[in-house]
Amino acid sequence: MDTLIQSPSPQKRPCCVGDPLPIEFSRISTPEQMNNLLEAFLGLSDSSSVFFDCSLERLLESRASDSEQNQMIERVLKLGSVLIEAGERSARKLACKHNSIVWALPPDLTFKVFSLLDTRSLCYAAATCSMFHKFSMEPLCYSNIDLTSIVPKVNNAVVSAMIQKAGKDLQSLKLGILSSPTVCSTKNSVNASGYSWNSKKSRQCKESCVLTRSCLTSLSADGGAAGALLRRLHLYNIDRMDNAALCAALSPCPSLLDLEIVGLHIELRQTLESVSKNCHFIERLFFESSKTGRDDSLKSPTCFELVNGCPHLTSLALRGFKLHDFKARILVKGFRKLKSVDFSTSYSITGSFLRNLGSGSNGGSLEVIILRDCIQLKEVEVARFLAAVLAGDFKLLRHLDISNREGLAGEAEWYKRNNSPSILPIERVLEERPEICLLAEFPDVGSFIEIVDSDMDSDALQLSLPFTSSSEGSYSSDHGSGNEDGRDVGYVVYEESSDEVDILTI
Image (cartoon, rainbow, N blue to C red; front, side):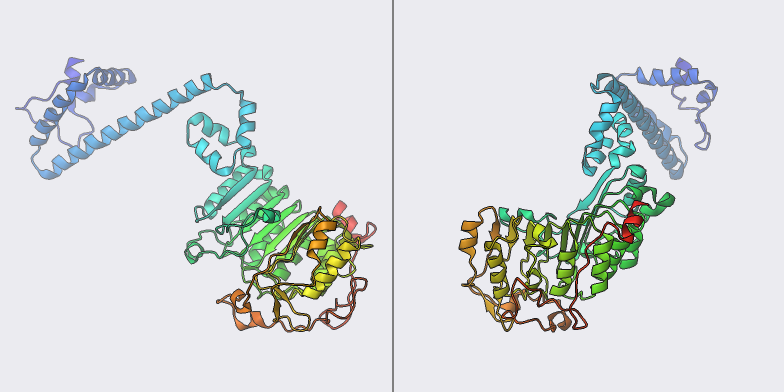
């Protein structure tokens, strides 16, 4: 051993740098000899570092040129890094062995615990040790993927890898950039999305988003195995997502129950057509427009298709669209199981769609009605609705929001605002129907121009469809629910004997 670690003689020039090993090291031909050499090095005391420094200096001085000296230094650094990596690998193996011995939970229970972690915590746990990394590779751990964040942190590759790990166990997928929530009253907790629909996305966040239209293509891989059992899909502010990409993502998701879309540049009509075609079992649909007041694409036939194609819908939110009363009426009266409607920030709803819904129709099952900041919501229509509530209609109603930061619209002209509605029997409703959470918040002084987005083009302000005067009809009639062609429209009720039942049961 002594001959193996002795320093070269100063009078004798060592082997050239190009040789794989010094001449003495060439005798090492078996693992046992290498083990002995490494053990000899490890047996040196900490004070031996001084001798290493001196030896290295002598070796460098023996080199004829600077290039040879640099090459020797690089080999020393490389050898040191190799030893460090080997030591770290051995430390991880030893720690993994130790953890497996002291870990109290059996493997099956550990997999169960890991499957309950959120995506971020699961990634942190996987990076802790080799044992945790092994447990985190179980597909069940990725059944509920949440990659949402305030700032962009993931790209398409990360999403694809997560979906592939989950495989057929994927049940929930949330992607995108969350808008910063605004401070709101606890009474507004009925907002199921949890994200402020009045807050604006920062331009920096939008410009740096790394998710593209192909971020959901993995749902269709392997014959749509990942999307087959997907129950929940939430997408937030993915600027590069378009109609074709979203429709392609929904096609392999026949089991979808909950779809939430916020801030995507997609068309309402095409989205609803895709939902009614592919997602027959959906129970909750939440869709918030990325361009408030600009999307007027929804037509009556699409409303009928959605009613017939999605008979199990219980919660419907269409925020920020040009949704006219007759279309809202088709939807509300058509869905037999509908319990919650949210048409907040609609640019066309006056409230006439609520007429004759409280008794003898599907609208009587409504528990939540949110009409917050609807520009054309008329005071007289709200008053008639509250009168119907006092008369005993809408017996299941538990939450009503008619708040408007610019006041309610006048009877004849919608742009004449009433900031202190005097004809609304609010106090009486609160007294006679105490089970109802009634939100009716209005400003002291209002200015309609304040609610117009500075980025909105002139088309967004052209709310030109005439509405039936509030003095015509009442909540005991169906007046005020015309369609695009000027004709009265009925509504579709899903029948068990219809053809759609056969399609759903196959």
